[in-house]
Image (cartoon, rainbow, N blue to C red; front, side, top):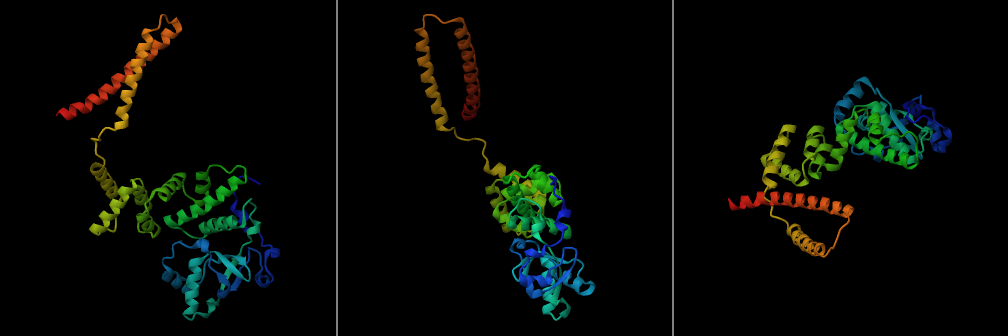
Length: 325
């Protein structure tokens, strides 16, 4: 199989042999639409955390225009687990509860994960299907893309562990499947690993744009917590990249003093060096003769020592002169 994943391979026919007897009544290939009762659909825990905004607008659109995209599901015992279409599922469920009888059943496409020709566990195949199919079907927020990136990273780790050929770099793998640049993946990854919890929640709730979150993530954790306190104290709910940069610079001035006390262990090492140099001087006095080769080595070492001592003197002179002032 080619190293590059082809999304077309996700659209092959459904194998009936994988369905339970109670599910065969809905068994069709993936090119066809099957109407499944709402009660037979099960939400997917892997889709928890994705944005569910504008449900009311979606309900209005479905009520007036109809459902424009089918749900994608997989067999789950006697029921079907939703891969994509949770917002549409919630909207149609609410419409049905409000008395719109035609949404008692939902048009779905049944996907057979066994057709995914990759060396992956069933769980990873499902994650891969969720991520790739979701990206084809709707526009996602930055926080949604972060969650999809985490899913695809798990897939990448498993493929790498199993020695999948031509896998490529993680960043390129994620960028291609998320439909963003490698730089975009790097920014999302940096935010994921460095944004303090006090801001991470706001980012996932779409209250902070990605570039602002990235700028905040570049600050030390103490500075991020201080910034959160500053915003709360002053009732600030919206900030820009420039706002974050201004606070960061001010925080550095106030919290990173330039006049640091000398570290005792550092100066203790000078006394150790001094003692060793005195012992070396005594040993040199006892030498009757030195070969030309060793003499050249000793001279080189001597010059190196003199240069290092001179550098140390310059550094200490800089701070002793400040103290005298």
